[in-house]
Length: 375
Image (cartoon, rainbow, N blue to C red; front, side, top):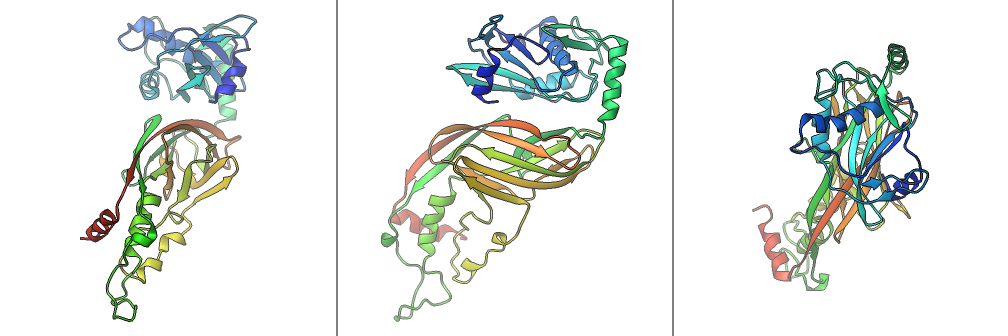
């Protein structure tokens, strides 16, 4: 969620889609009754009659009929909240927690998407009863009556063909998902002038290389250090937790940061090779693996085709894309997921934090590194 979106919400009154909390919810080390407050609010908003996402803004002092005031707060971990909530409800609730900087204050945002209802606890927790449907009405929380619950069931049947998806970035080779805020440490290299880097291999005295050697091999090593070593590979994974197949799923990731570098495997500089002919053999440059990167004046968009995702399964992108920057930077990615049987795109946010170490390498270091490749 962007800071300007929160700025607009500060002028609104509490409702079925908005709540202000000056202080963070008691959680770590808190008693059951205290932790139940957070659980009740998420249940109530998830069950509310609404057509847009609900937000709980934590670290905001409410001002009725005026502009509420950001005061800041300490934050909870999204993955901890997910485990806490999902372990207690009848089926997963699609929600997220993120920290957003507003007017120099760090605000917590819980966002609860519109989804099938009703939700309820399977076991009593603190003062909250099992099998009771808590619901947000206006700026208060109550319990749903049998007629309301029946109407929720009707709406659920009408929309049961709509799959419910969860998104993550991950490491394609290890098949592991990344945390809610991705922290990356990379290295950025400054290299010697190409004129100072020696040619590779031997020649026959006429300036012709022997044994098909790549005479630019050492220069290629230097360029690889400069152009590739600061890049980080990312894949995407979408999990289908519903009972409906998600058809022809496409993920689009938007980076509104023109200074970033975003490339596919085929566009990334290849690893240096000693053989002159092998240098020009790049099968990955010609393979369309369902990943495409486009750039405009505002940033980059990555489009990844995942195909159909069966119920209870996860689909990974077939290839990674590469993301890098040459200075320390925090930024946000806006993700949308569309599909043939999704009524409208599902939207997510992801925070990135890149820390970059800068190094200069000498000609001798380039040559030594080149000689060590493949040994």
